[in-house]
Image (cartoon, rainbow over all chains, first blue to last red; front, side, top):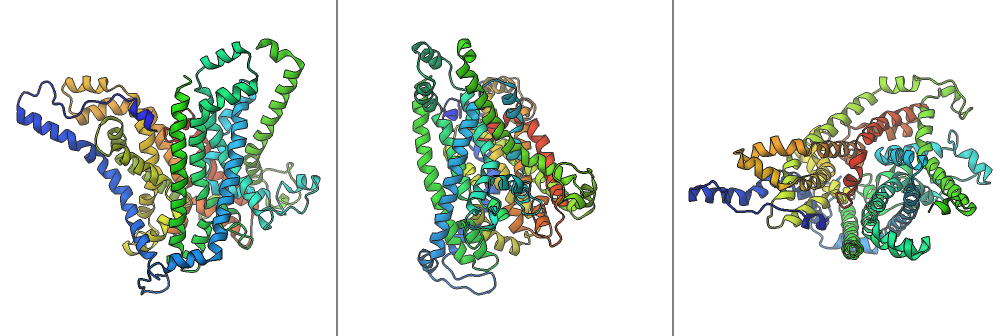
Amino acid sequence: MSTTVASTPNRPTGQPLPDSSQSTEAAAYARRRRFRPYLVLAPAMVLTIGIFIPFFAAIYLSFTDYSLNSSDSSLIGFDNYVSMFQNADFWHSLWITIQYAFFCTTVEMLLGMGVALLLNEENFLSRFLRIVLIFPLMIAPVIGTLIWKLMTNPSVGILRQPMEMLGLGDFKWGASPDTAMFSLVVVDAWVYTPFVIILILAGLRSLPRSPYEAALIDGGSPWFVFKNLTLPMLAPVLLITLVFRLMLSLQEFSIIFALTEGGPGDSTMTLSLQAYNRAFPFYGLAEAIPMMLFLWALVYLVSFILIGFWRRAQQRAAGFA
Amino acid sequence: MIQRTHSPLAVVGKTIQMLLLLAYALFALFPLLWMVIMSLKPDSQMLTTTFIFTPTLENYATVLRSDYTRFFFNNLIVSVAAVLVSLVVGVPAAYALARFQFKLKEDIAFTILSFRFATEILVILPLYLIYQRLGLYDTYLGLIWVYQLITLPLLIWILRGFFEDISPDIEAAAQLDGYSWWRVFLQVLLPLVKPGLVAAGLLCFIFAWNAFTFPLLLSNNVQTSTVIALRYLASDTVHYGQVAAAAAISALPEVVLALLIQKHLVRGLSFGAVKG
């Protein structure tokens, strides 16, 4: 992101127009110019920061015993945080969240990479698929989940017969604790693998040609070329895709809510679902907020580290061109 | 290269590649096809047949006669308004971030981007209380405002890239001709970024339309079709055909929009980090 900015030709600032002869006018112009960026940005900042004032309210609330069904509350210090760390449900949900993000991201990155490499070939199937593949990504994740819920439905679901043929007639998908996580990963992969494919495919198509010509002359094997040329040159795109997927899968709410609601039992109760359950059906707002602050910190830590890798990969990849 | 593609080993390889690709295509596209099939199937044949049935539009008619139409229009109003608000405040912001040099520029840009990845539930919990106090809970205005977290970062980051693609010389020339900054912006620059503007606007619309967590928790009566479609399945007397029809009605407009913005999709989805 920053590199695209750095290469941009920018208008010199603070310079008066050539035809402004009077000095006061020029000074006024320069002043206008200095403040204009902030002025122009202000409405956007006000709108979004307005939403974030509650964020500070949230931090305050997390130090109180506030709940949605009682009117008075008092400051109780770090009690909510202490009880969160002592609560087995929190650690369980953290573990489920990490599992969910790990499985989804791994499956989507590997599958997406594979399909993108196949789609990079020129044939009619690739050309057709490159157009229609975006459909699952464009429809709402809950609508996609809804379709999968119908497909895995024991009475009308289309997947019953093929599963019976595979000897898995009693496969319960989202309805059993043993298969619920698997089902979620399938749905998440269905929704978001196209995202990975589209980004990696764009990365593949923008790779410089000359290193490949050199490798062809040297007679390197396809695997050697992939490992030593494609992967390092593609690393920035792979990493930024990984960042986006990891950030969003750690926080995924709608797919899990729509398919399993965190169940059966608490087998798919990620932190987002746990916080939702505590805050809304059970009125424990002050308990839910520390969990979400923890998740937020986790997401930012992970993305901060990966963005660092991304910057370095970009510099390395620039060396190939 | 030509010799390689004709050797028997390469032919086998190519076939395997095609089969793998077909397998993925089946996984990705069959659910959508099946949704359409289900939506055309009458209730009486729902449990007895798979592919052979007498197609009917009854499910669509029932869904369109129900409350769903109202929720569909709610979604349309909220999403269109959210995109319009984002355009009004976001286009100048994107321009400023692309052209001007000023202190904290990159910090501001990244702050705006981070809103897109904010933990939604964390934002909603306090907002739920504040919305109720301000009377914004369950209103169009409340949803349009919170949707800015979805649409505004996306719009600003996509358009910033499009503004950066325009040479500053064009502006300078127009300014030397005596046009004011606002006239240059409106009459010279906006027409130049129009393709980007349309693509970004449509992508924002799609994401606003798909929003689930915000309307689920910050609205009740003024609900969107995305949330309501899910409730169709939870109702006591499930008509699977109607569920599928509701899903199709919600999904099909987006499929059409997606085709329109294909060219700019990569840039949009990666917030300009990957230029497609």
